[in-house]
Length: 406
Image 1 (cartoon, rainbow, N blue to C red):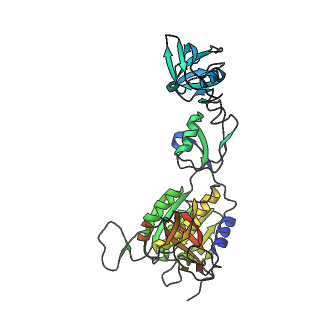
Image 2 (image 1 turned 120 degrees about the vertical axis):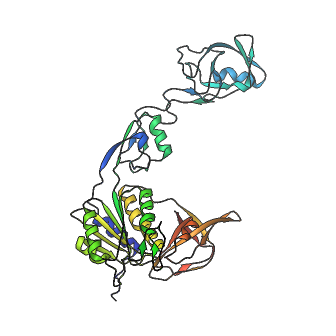
Image 3 (image 1 turned 180 degrees about the vertical axis):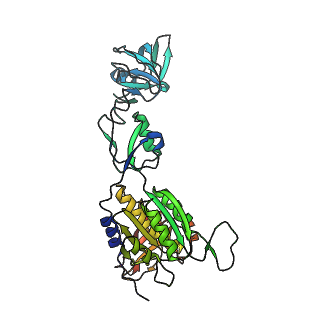
């Protein structure tokens, strides 16, 4: 059987990026309230200050701070000359030894530079208050533009819009944003042994896990999944499906049939549909991964291993990596932890090691998780993964490692 000519993971990622470098992502205008999960294709610049005016951050009295200094040695009396509701604007200007009643969020009247909290005052007669402590200028005051200044870049191009980002858009009155149109993906599982996961399984058959699991990962990453297929190990059927899907989607993800066995047709099919860039990556699990590209249709094709764990790991390391870099997203969130025990690894081949995380004596510890690549249940225990480079022979106990969170 012909041996695979493997690339390193880093080289494979660079080959994919280079092949698809001329692909321009399309952009689309989205209502801000419908843009959750999309990626900004342009900076968002504030066209106004937030807040638009000085506001009180507490319930109390707007005063001049210097009028409170005498309260350090005793009580101070101030004249109450007005009251401002939270939705009201006053044109009255505060004079010395005067106070205006305000609420949390109220407009701060002219002449006032601080707000005395209600708790440190006492009403005296109908139009006076007593204050019991001194305060500093701008105490309990939110300045105009303190949160967001006009002209400020509040969200950068390449930001994945989350709930808090949508809140910022709303605070600025931005109704519509420009985002990248989601790339379209199709998922195919191939194998004579596969059957519908929700039917009774006869002996010799297994449930089709990959097509459904990979489609969930693809949706989470930001793809629009156009089709999910399960096809027998027949080259003609696979070829027909891939040729048809090339007219409809941007990325085709085929799991199974990526090795060099008698019924492994992925490479042959991809060769007839484009140029094979990669067949074999020096990594465990996921060595027999294939990547091809059709420059005319601008379609990337990925042949992932049939084993579920290997397929998911290679999806994360290649397909999600490509999408995130293309959209300008920062790399997945990671943190550092100490490995709990010695871990062996073959020099010359990278290892993707799944880990759990726990605290021991105040330190974050990464606990190695071991499983065969056909097993998927390990993902329920894993909090993340670490990559052991091909130049290393393993990890030593207590060694600090980077853990990419799943």
